Amino acid sequence: MLVPLVSRAIDILAIVLVLVAAAAFGFGLSALGQNEDFRAVYLMIVGALALRASTEILRPRGGST
Image (tube, rainbow, N blue to C red; front, side):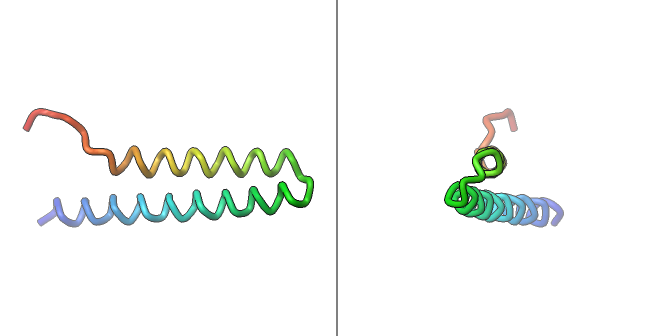
């Protein structure tokens, strides 16, 4: 009973991280267009880390059962 609830929460967290990554990339592109280079690089790094985190969460782990 607890396992499906935890699994669903992890899936929701991964989706939120993908949305955060998309927003950070979008704001980074906007900052790049306004010649705010430092802000653009920062937001692109945040987006990349959020995207990596979401894929790490969803990646199946090999382990003994």
